[in-house]
Amino acid sequence: SQKIEQNSEALNIQEGKTATLTCNYTNYSPAYLQWYRQDPGRGPVFLLLIRENEKEKRKERLKVTFDTTLKQSLFHITASQPADSATYLCALGRLGNNDMRFGAGTRLTVKP
Amino acid sequence: EPEVTQTPSHQVTQMGQEVILRCVPISNHLYFYWYRQILGQKVEFLVSFYNNEISEKSEIFDDQFSVERPDGSNFTLKIRSTKLEDSAMYFCASSATSGRANEQFFGPGTRLTVL
Image 1 (cartoon, chains in turn orange, blue):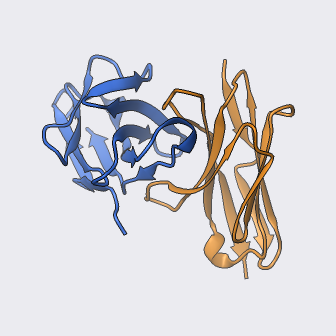
Image 2 (cartoon, helix red, strand yellow):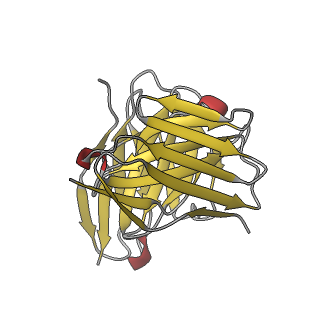
């Protein structure tokens, strides 16, 4: 069966450091992968999308990589700030299909 | 900035009752979605809707569920006879395109509590 796993439930880092979150998948061939941020009691907010033929995408302090051989995406937040504290979700989608599958999320806490 | 809105923010109902959750997607978007998130669990896809019909649905979206776009702005999710396990946060989302450019905008959610 399809599985999407995010490396850990919780990640604590010090302000200014780089946070690295992992999303692994099995039995799935995504055409694209997205990362969302979710704050408690709120809906997910889109951050970045990367397609299966792209290796890396950047947006300000965010960077996403996508390795279809390893079946893995890494999500980096550089120069992290306490305001980056939230749950980060990866979501996978297939070509011609709007059925996005989400991982369970990693709760990031950035300590001042 | 345009946003997806949902009403009500919290709905409490008795088991067996019908509920309708309402959403107003972003006005120029063409694709609409419902997701649910049981407390502490992952976001789960329910259904996608395009051109006035369902384009995909998950195994969760059984005969108890239906969606409708009754006018040019609203998008609703109806649960015919609620069960205790329907208690969850329900998110509506919309996107301008589908597939590989599928950036979805989520609403704030409706918390459904079934007693």
